[in-house]
Length: 187
Length: 130
Image (cartoon, rainbow over all chains, first blue to last red; front, side, top):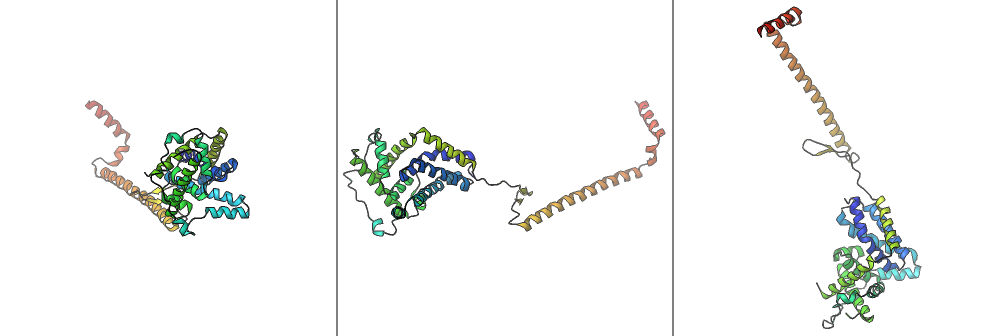
């Protein structure tokens, strides 16, 4: 089982990204902090006796559920319908899920040099572009690439198929590339 | 790694910078939340375990699930203690019997050991022998 030190180190290693994830979703610092605090409390209380290696996917599952709970609590019925529709998977719409993204290999939209991305104003633009992604795409992108979870773990947390995760990630990446290009960051 | 993944990694690199440049107030509130959560960490209760000679756990504190096994282990323990006590008594009796036999079989009569005159003679005889 995870010792107190292991749990402490784990939480310290994820708390900032967790806050950012929640902030991208709810766009309110206090609400994002509450979500992270609730998630930390929940994993400590309910899963504090689990081995340390099981903590990352567990915490992400708790965090994503807390974000969804926040929307359920705070939104009006109409907004909630929109939100939950946005969070639902693509399985109900197979044609949409199977839609493939055609990329122009010659255009090479992902060849952004790291130096260009590291310009001072880039951070705000990237974060803004991320906030504007559809919730499911943002969730898949952050879990898969920022949190480093594999496709199966991401699918389990999101409650969708691995194929949907790949689709969401691909769409998110293309959308981010397009958004940054529109802001003058030429990939 | 595909170009798509490379681009995603670069985006995450930028996001990492954002996560590392949070306001101090936010960082402090996150730290406080972490400390509060750690106060509530669930831990497995450590239970007393009675281990047998072969290393197997006889009593592992799971009496709620296996009451019969618990009672059998207790019985075996009590039986073991009783047998050890009886065996020890047999050994003591055997030693006493050997001493009695040696005393009775000796040429010297037993009451000679209680005779002070005989003890004095033995001491005198042993000192004169030096």
